[in-house]
Image 1 (cartoon, rainbow, N blue to C red):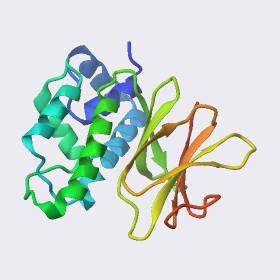
Image 2 (image 1 turned 90 degrees about the vertical axis):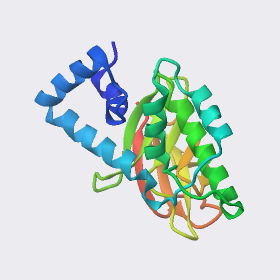
Image 3 (image 1 turned 135 degrees about the vertical axis):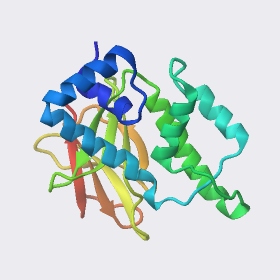
Image 4 (image 1 turned 45 degrees about the vertical axis):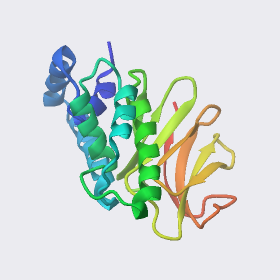
Amino acid sequence: MKDLRELLPDYALGLLEGEEKDRLEQALQSSPELRRELTELREVLHRLPESLPPVAPPPRVWEQIRRRTFPKRNFLPWAAALLVLLGLGVGGWGVSLHRQYQALAQEQAKLARWLADPEVKWQLIKNSQGQPFGTMLWREEGPCLMVLREPPPPGRVYQAWGRKNGEKPVSLGVFSGRVFETDYEGFDFMGVSLEPPGGSPQPTEPLGRVPTS
């Protein structure tokens, strides 16, 4: 039986059904902490598309998304949830948007693969004021996926870091989108910072971190 916190992402996306949904809704009525986590998670998920223009993917891409979705879930609400997550609404399809669409499609496909795995766990990434700005999904064997609410500002990049207790952070790579896949194994914390293009040897503008255990 899943821990109640592990049910929150599906519930936030409208994908939870049956006994698990009833059990979670009962718990939400009596747990302010669960309600707060649900509110924070919804804020992160539903604000992701705010900075993205609408892009209409070709039919062949919808077929790829359908094949990647978890087979026990109904495709229509699952596809709608992905649209909310990555801002793929209705709009024009032109050559000028080709590169942008490719980047969005890659983010969407990566997120779809992760969310379709029932064993994936998650945790909100919060700043020093306790405000969530992203989510980290992870699997027990080590891989993790960072999903941030907004892309970095123009002329800046995100940089992911792993850190062991008592040691300096180790760079895990830079990214200019909102989705970054890496590995948390061997680290006590995972973090994100805002850096100049190319990244920095050490974090210059840390945004937040999450414990890995």
